[in-house]
Amino acid sequence: MNDILLVCYSRTGNTHLVADELARLTGWPLALISDSEPRAGLTGDLRCMYDAFFKTCPTFHYQGPDLDRFEHVVLLTPVWMKGLAAPLRAFLSEYDLGDKRVSVICTQGGRGGFNAVEEIATLTGQIPSPVQILLQREVLSGLSPQSLEDFVVQVLASSTYQRDRQRSTWLSPVAS
Image (cartoon, rainbow, N blue to C red; front, top):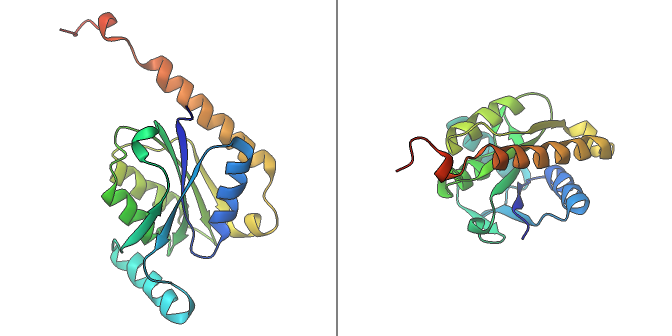
């Protein structure tokens, strides 16, 4: 069973390009978060700014497999106004990922990727690892396959490390 799931929100398609390439490289299933109301045009831009500034949790649609089937979730999100995209915030507020390993890829036009990662850490109760921040120009000019391959190696290594780090109950000195 594949224990790693990609969960992607993408408003303009840039983050989806990264998610598609990552899914192609790895064979990991891809789940999509979409807006309940379209964010196209000026009104969509204004809604994005409002949601980012006030840190709202708008309604969204999740299209993907049951999260309970996976031990590790890779979140892919754009950065909005130097912070987390509101639909992903809403997803993390509704779905508890506290018992899963979490990794993150952020796409950004300029800055704020680490602010988004910090909010993800707060919402999930854990520090995501590994984390990759991609600039929009890198995505649009053609992703370097090496950077995604390096990310995949880190994800697999973190999964192995976490699994090896867990001690069996019978070895624990405090087990009852």
